[in-house]
Length: 159
Length: 282
Picture (tube, each protein chain N blue to C red):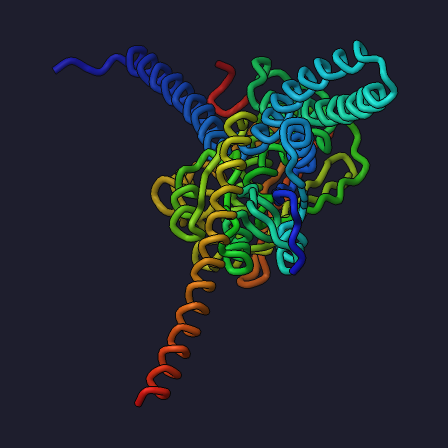
């Protein structure tokens, strides 16, 4: 899996116009790398090989719903934050998303750019912190097991 | 005991008949609004994306223009190159805005075909266009699970009450969508058949059970749960097609092989065939 220096945002919407608008806004207001997909299947394929910090998905899409896509995103990259960007006037989908895919945020269309940017910034930070945490935990595990080894050798040396 | 006055009884009958007609018209109108209401979530979804895009693009264009201004004031080659890039961004966003506005206009056009005030008037319309407008309203509701295929043949202008026929198309399309569990396909086919046009709407749903078939056009009959079906749609549709337009509405259905509704309407409304809208003109 390749890692990027720049923070990476993945956006999935079957409407090309939404991707174009969000990309244009993020390009003018941030340094994030934006990867847009009109097909959730292709976006999931991208996630198999590329690390992202946040995945923003539409809800109603042909073939694969936003919930199904974010579910897959959670399996592939659990630390990446998941955001549902939806125009569907149905709170049921929001509740379902929060419960099923561990949603970070739910944004309604038409969206407010500033609000979306803030959510994306915080979501990226959250993902980076989670990854750092995981790295630290694994460092701790390694340190713990090497300490255990030292302790074992010390005991063997003295007993 | 006095004898009943025949004149008074006849007047009462007349008043009752007028009342029934008025209620029938009201029912038909309310049903039409209810069908639009059922599609509302999908319609809202359809227009929210383009509105979101336009709002966002507007903000980006204003910011980009500010930066272009700054770059032009700077005047150095690097700033000018940057300004050129921003002009390109604005141009592509303007193109997106155009598509977004067209999308909203299409949905509004679809809604307008139902809200026409001159509904009682006969007009010559292109039924293929009307069907496409109606499909715009179901697009949002269907798009995540149903593919809609159209095979629209060449049709002459058809003299009809367009908004009423649209109500029939919408009703049958919504029924077809509800019949399909999970993923499926709806096919709309139009052809000229002599002095009539034939519209066939097929779905890949489970089909209508043989025991339900004789009842499906009966007022109040529904197999849908409370709150989903009113049992009015097909009875109103049949009245619109047959009584108002002198056409025919029937169906064929095989369990497991889906259902096809056949709507046939005359191209010209002769004096004999042209009926009144259900409930009369109100």
